[in-house]
Length: 113
Image (cartoon, rainbow, N blue to C red; front, side, top):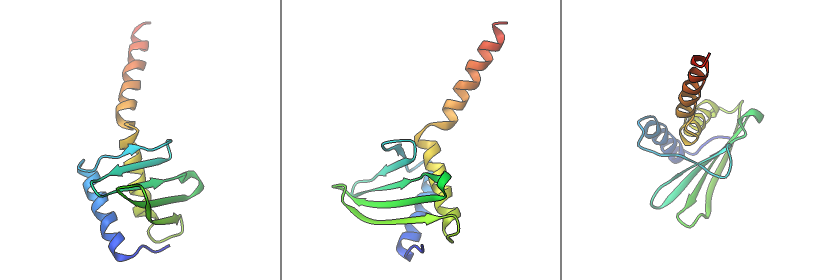
């Protein structure tokens, strides 16, 4: 699938602002769906990436679906969309924090011996 130019610009901004910590993503009804809420809209990105598919959905403030685009691994935009999804998912699920906590817990268990 090919994204219209307007949406390409939005995705590029989402990537930049997500990387800079200015867009906050939250888990949305499961580990394969992340949502960023704004005043006038929400953006959702859904996996499951292990099936080689990622979708991005744009909704208005009332939750009405405005546009949705699905990408597969052979699509031109796959790397960009998948990269955004992966980064947003890690942020929403606090992956780095959880891994650090796990490492600390394992270190405590090791020191008990």
